[in-house]
Image 1 (spheres, rainbow, N blue to C red):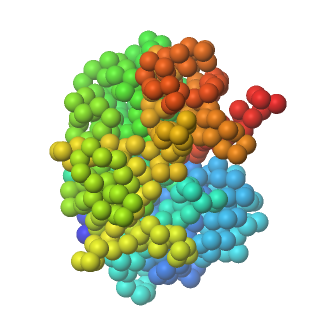
Image 2: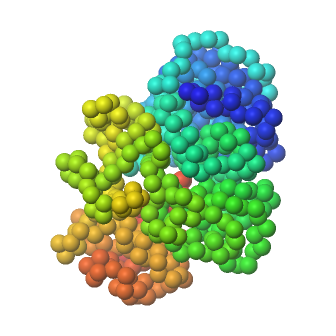
Image 3: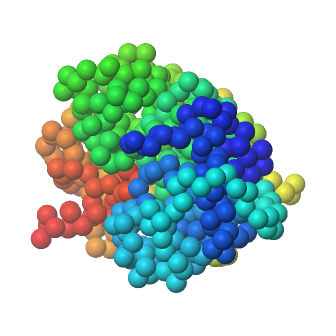
Length: 491
């Protein structure tokens, strides 16, 4: 398999592939639908190298469109349906799609912003036969399959160019560690605009497993009931969703699930959350992971390996290499902290239409192996296990000492009663670090507890308790919104 649609074509045709609400498709039906959609796209002039943008809630149609685009050599981009018109305008101007497909709620904004034709999903052929689209230019493994927009140090989201070869290598290497099974039912309430969600489509196809697509409604108070009703065996979670599951279990809800595996990435998962999940779901196994869109996944821990190596994110994927580097790019010995550098066939092709940014992060070794300088800080132990230490741009000075945002947040999450934590580093407008938390705690109690976990210079000057931690559409802490809320409290 060298192209994304070949993953689908190799899956067992009779097995259930993907389910959402009252729509269920077998792998054979998903294949036929992708062929029909490829013909439909081709009839509208979409071909190799053209971009298609889908702004829609999770639905099997999005998976079919991913594979349809692959068949044509077109480049697939999925946007969260909650993306604001400001963000949508940026993406459409940046990638200049040949065609846009948008949910009814997003249709007006898409039509106002796109120069291309815009369709709603109801206008797409639902059950067109498996007609083979007319042959166009041959699709190559080095061709981009997806543009995955991700936030970071730039003012607006930037698109990571993700070729077929890199995506398939990453998916296979992840599946080699996670070992999804043919009889697994995998629940994905993560948006397909988030690569953690999108890759569930590929992982399930590689295993012949069934993917159940959910949305925000199933990721909240209905989460535990959904896991039971859908007979879920595997659940990829971010910390916010895991925290919701813990609270539901604490309320005495009867799990009644066959959940065997939880995976976690996107942000560090608090150890207290993992302990509570294991206590409430006997027999559950956990695999913590670390990754970034620029290489999809860096490392994966063995099942329950966090119990023996707390704080570690596991070992690099097979067939790849990762190390901590000094300022000159040299490898650091075990135990020393430096910039995380990743080498291997999973390193993506750079940033879309951003040559200077690409040149600063993406390189190649003398033997041509792709190399990514991540901007993350980490260390490795003598056995090659990765320990994340924070972003380089999230290290600040306090009393002339270096302090890691990630370390302070981890210490705050260790305080009983704290359910989420975010540190805002000092800035021109804010001369001292501030801590925001959620939970049944008082600011003074949290700060007092931190003095027993951190050196004095690492304890933030002030703590604020929020009723809820603002999250991005992908379930990560939205620190811009945190800063705005704290600003409101000071006015």
